[in-house]
Image (cartoon, rainbow, N blue to C red; front, side, top):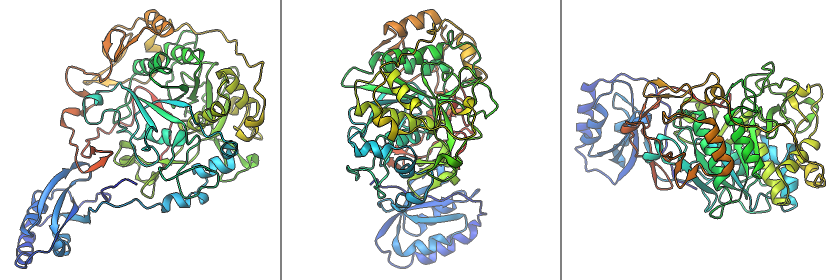
Length: 558
């Protein structure tokens, strides 16, 4: 278990400076007792009154904690009651290191969207665990906002970091998930509490993801606001193609819980082309269908590519049977030609929380206790399927991507009354897939993509903003001309990446001639207070933008 600082939600309070000093001065006449570490939260306009009160009480002000409008301090234990009465102070909480409560995890049996319920009652993952397939030996690449080592993702060797393609790579946040999306997806795919040990079926005490013994390879493309550009996603996919089987890696699955509303044909689209090249390289590519709703008539890019597995979201309505299931209202519909391939649970899925991240601070109602976080979207559904693919590959390592897709689609359970444009083949059923023979006729023969189309068209309506300027046109996130033919050839021939350079330029930590990205001032990051695995974490100043550049497939956090 990891130690944490206790925080509460800010409210507004007035400060009467004249009342604080006499109270503190009177209390300080007694001999102080042993000091304790505390977190002090301040109201708006408190000024220096709370800090002055701490000093007057014989305490010491330590680190500012801007993200919670407060600071850490040491204060004599017998002065805490007096400190709590000082005008302008909202709360004073002892800052002792302690183990997180497992009450939120042990209550997962009653949670319809918990990973316990999804694995043991809905998807059939526990049947595969019983048969000895737990994801062992399989690496799942997650192109997202990074991963933080909360319990469930902190065991030795559980997470391997690829390149960080964001400006945060030049800060203490390198590889870490300041947005909160990547950690949530990684938890669904392969989370496993450090205390958990096989056999996993029926374990109600620990958090256990779909493929608990798979390894996560995290490639960070999104910053603290979830912002990124399509060109960064292409570079990340290219890195997986070029490096996924090197240096001890065995990337067999790639999860992309994002998309754009680009409208060009998948044959031309550079993002769809990159995803398809990963597929042809032997990687099962799983992509969120999109969250624009049941009447959208089109899947997001790169889910539009027919080779990859496009995942829609199923709403189980809190039961284990498909009889009352429906397609989630936010899940994209297809056009009758390219539809979702299948569905997986995506409504109110409970996964690992990333405390202090953007999503965590903006959506406190999504928190379940100290450790868990609830969200809905085709992001979550795609992550479930990525874990399912890892289980099949750990059971039968010789399966090709086409065979994995065929196993999942041919054994899926149709949802009554839902059109194929919404559900594809239906809801995944790993109990059936695990016992079905490897299909010898599973070979997709769609027209292959060329990637020779427009980068701007791949962006659709979503654009990243750098130094106040929107990235638009045929230029990449570095402001360099994007040559579709050259990039496509480099992906195909695996020549774009050389060390940490992509296409001849350094992409491991983008620098923009100043450290500003989407309005967040990275030159002013303050790290202190909370710690993950030795990394200081507090004081991030969020800019208020939920996402830009890619549409993350988690539509609702509540």
